[in-house]
Length: 629
Image (cartoon, rainbow, N blue to C red; front, top):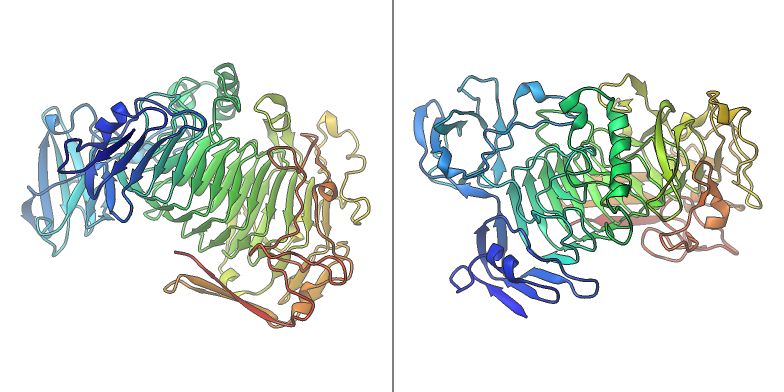
């Protein structure tokens, strides 16, 4: 059955349609702004989704905000609104503060609510005493009313569209287990979501709420107070117990969450396998996409994610364009992520995870961070253009055919013991600390002295931790033992360092070979097969107004090598701790024989080029343009 929702129709609410729609049904929504929380009552079934879609060619917005017109002038650009407690019903985001595990600014009193003018968020100023500066706001709530004072400067908020958040979610089932739902073609905006750490219920403006098989595609998702898309955990497996009880350490609480989830049915049959693709996700203050446990076996692809944590009013350890814990067999492919704090942050259990063909730039922390994971994880054919590219406190990684233009960092963690799993399964096989190493680095292109990488940068492995210098190219691995590096037998590790199993602080070997270094980039000492070109043969220009990146190479010979070959699962071996090969989620071998643009790589008479782009034997130079939006 197909339900049609229209502002002037007999069925004029998406939420009402969501009470009716069952497997195989389609809910088509027609032009207009729908100010409501859509909480599906039923889930679909495998092969029989419930589809919620905007009518073709029609602009449909679902909003968690309400327009406010009854502002009173106070002078000096200040305007006041006073709202009775009945206005909010059972949820008042101006009474609720942002808090939770790994949120660092609870004492400052930031609220879940927000004030907007013409779809632009003003900034809260909790300490201003009722006299906020320009484009800022302040609030106080008593038993009778909520008062909001905002400074609109020379603007009369009654002349434009002044809005405030009133709903926690926009499209989010109240109950768990509503699987197999498709949401496509909407503008989804303005939700008063709470901070979403891995040890709490992870709220999002939109999300499947602990279920299976959602498709979220072709939407614009914006202005969530914390998270845009949540693929994360539900509440029963733990909810901020570190902050609430202040007994056990947070790492232990997170381990407990994982084992509770396993007892509660966290398996491939019940959870994950979502698809989040072709969305624009922007202006969310914690993360564009977040998930602990619930993103397993999912595909996150072809999204444009930007302006994440743009206000920078508060901090915490869960802030990124994409922040995932336990991204088991998760494919992150073809996304453009920029103007965020971190780009992609894989935290705990990045096992079977693949990051491929993504573009990163203008991220102020780093493009890609992997933390306390044992692998295998694979990053291939990515373009890293921020001042800081790659940071790892992990092991079992593989970096292949990427373009690096900034700095990198590596360290160990001997104190935290985190899980690794049986291959392609949620079942835990063991726990171990991070000795460091067990990293493969092949066929990448490193660029030195690029304009986009000149900004000074200190890398902290988590906010509040001691800073450490980011280093050029792969010199971060100078102090690591170097493993065998030839194409016949590498990189299967040889014997690990003596007494490794007994906790001696010795790093595992790294395997670095056949990378290209241009524009003065420096190779790792003892690296075999490195091709080094001191001349400036490659340039990168980011045109933010035209939404394009131009990459130009004047000497393709600098990217070639007579010994370099196609990288496959067989070459990469197994991650040391998990004893798992670098296969895909269905345990099929991976062959990296196609480049960033999906062009076939050369192997026989002409060996494959280093970096993300392949050029033919007749090419001596190239210029490529990468566009977004």
